[in-house]
Image (cartoon, rainbow, N blue to C red; front, side):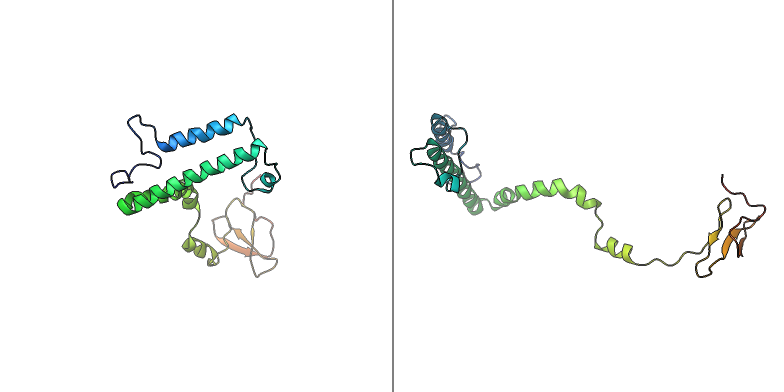
Length: 174
């Protein structure tokens, strides 16, 4: 491959017709598998493939499919090697494209998750709040003083009493 063709995708070296050698080879492999008239065949080298008889057309279909996959793999590797030598920025874009796509897909979910600072802040104990009775609500039990309740007086003042019965002048919700 030349420096000018390094930026072209794998299999894109084409003649005047625009058809690449990879296109022709891929079509040939597809035709061969179709001509064998098999729909499902095991992967090349798998235990199921090894169990096939040597004259089984599924065996040949698996070999042709594996050869075509290997050809595409090798073609992409050659293309990436040429890109690395001739256009490192395009090479980096090509080898990180899947990772970038994955990152774009998960970034919204990651943004909603708390980071370490937020988690640490949530784990810290907050100072105790004052016990405050609210008008219209039942009295509030006072921590550390069993049997004592804080009431809200008629003028909004906080009153501690040894009963949880509302005082006169207090409204309670129905």
